[in-house]
Length: 407
Image (cartoon, rainbow, N blue to C red; front, side, top):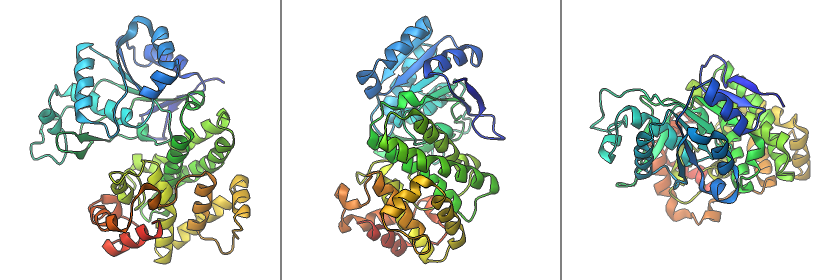
């Protein structure tokens, strides 16, 4: 397949997007032609490094351009590990940072580049780059070292220009965005993603579906974001169903990857979304309770759809999504098996059927979360910006109503 290369989103210079080549061929090409890089620092997931030969193959092809390698990071992008990479990348004089994998690596790499530009080496200095810090610097310099992401999941963080990381001295998670640059290039290689566990692939795929649904349900979306979300949904639903049936179907996996790109359009445009987004909202509060990143969307999305529909907040927009889902032959087959009728099934019913067909979790009890934890989750959720922009206004009782639907 010839390479497709250009901006990931219309009207935005970055990130650039490359697919059609193997990730190694694409990286070698763009390290030379796009970035003129000679000192490449690689951050690779532990599973890819330990269970495949991909990292060794990449190092061999890059040769003496490899300035350093970091294998593995703990979840939630810990500050201590970010600072270790900052020190290593600074010592090696890296002029390009490459992530091979998903999850914490992506956010960490974005913050590493920001920290390098601001001569950060301690927890206190890293904290001074946080927008909410009382000791925030007034002279934050923009990140300079470009980041290339080669993702293996569908979570989509490689398309955003913000990042989250956890101060392991306090246990608090902080957002970084001032001075932060999103990745300069995203390389998609569906063959590489066949190493990703099905649970991770499918749950992060539903997270991407959640982004599309929330965009199309939002009362503050715009035409461009809506169009991308429709296109993303039309790729993700059949792509996920096909890759569930055959995990080696690379065409279906690329379909999912491109759908996940489209799903991030609203986030890159600053569209206010709703309550179930796992990057924020109620879903963000379920993470500390032990619910996985993509799994929060699997649990919450149908309940949030039902809550908003019941409140009459976005009925017309939900009905448009229902029509879109019924147009998918793969989705129609699932709905038929579940006995759902187009005239009576609401969006929550359809999403529930799709998620169950993918054998993803649907209840909090599957993670040991019971009634006793709901009040705390609800109270923390109300502090979140996405909850405040949910189509139907949410108070504590409203959040509790949603959570109780999925106990």
